[in-house]
Structure formats: C-alpha cells, structure tokens
Image 1 (tube, helix red, strand yellow):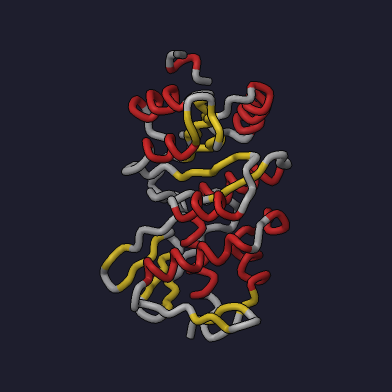
Image 2 (cartoon, helix red, strand yellow):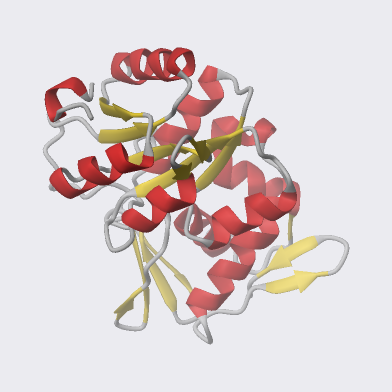
Length: 241
C-alpha cells in the first residue's frame, strides 16, 4: 500500500467562489502501469492534481483521506471492479468517468444509470479523454454565462451552473445539466439526436456512442418529474415546448 505522498457537487459548472489557484483533484485508478503513467503525465500537464492507484483497496483508502473532484476508474481491477470504487464514492460530490475495454451496451447502460458522468473505451485517444475530463469538470472556455434560462417549471442559472424545479435545486450531473440547458435554449424546437449530442459533448462529439443519449434522456426525465416534459418526436429526435 502506498502512502499519500506516493500517490502521485455533483460536479457541474464550477462554483465561482472556488479558488482558481487550486487545481482540480483527480483520482486515477488504473492497473496498467503504462497507461496510468501516461495519463498522470498528461493530466498534470493540464494543471490537474492526480492521485494514482491500481487497486480497489488503495482507492478506498484515498477516498477516506481526501476529497476528489473527479475519479477516472478502470472497470476491471485486480481486486474488484470500478463499480466497487464507485460505491465507495457514494455520498460524495466526485464526478466519475469509467475507462475500460468493456464496450457492450449493457455495461455502458449500467455505468451511466449507476451515476457515472462518462464512459470511455480503450484504446482511446488522449485528446478525446482530456476533452471529456475538461467538459466533465466544466472548465471549457465559454462555459459560463450570466443568465437565467427557463423551461416549463424549471429555471437554469447558467452563471452558478445550477437548475431548479420551483424552489428545489435539481441534483444533476454535468452531462444532465448540459442536456437540460440545451433543451432550455431551444424551447419549441425539435432537435435531432445528432444536434443534441453535439451540444452535450462539444469538442468530443465525434466520439460519442449514440445509444448513450437514451440513457441520459431517461435520467433527466426522472429528475425533472412534472416540472418539464421532454417529448419524443418519433423518427426525428426530441422537443420541449
């Protein structure tokens, strides 16, 4: 077991009160030493503070002793799975990206419905992964705007990166927030799945699996309840009036 020195909200859009001099903390759990070392180097070059482990029990120990903004988890680990680490993160505001060779639809759906913010399959392109990390943490240029956007009984505060159903704050992941904002900024318009994915994933849009959109729509509908209705336009896409 390595010590801390050796380790190398629900997050949506960052809180404006966060000290910009403090780097985002990322927990990387990957047992392939070559992949892990390359990712640590690339992430640190981007200004992130990275804690690295290769086992579930190492990740659990790190989670107990430190708070992380994002966790990148290999699905298959020597002493368990990425889902075991995800369970250890339950109750925290740590965003989760799964990194794995397992790319079947069942695993993708299970990961996303289990609260993961993203799912990247190996082999992956480094720029794609960095773009998704940046998007998940909400640090992309132009991400913040000073405006309140409404949609039915929902209001989206784009400056604070929060959404409300009446007086209740909606507990949204970064991707759910961007999906809701896309609908709110296109009220009454029918959007194709391709248009929606482009808005959600930005620079990484070309790498998105289309079948994951159904999962995000389902999760967002459940959280919105009666506050706003996402209508399916058969054979075309979705619309919210």
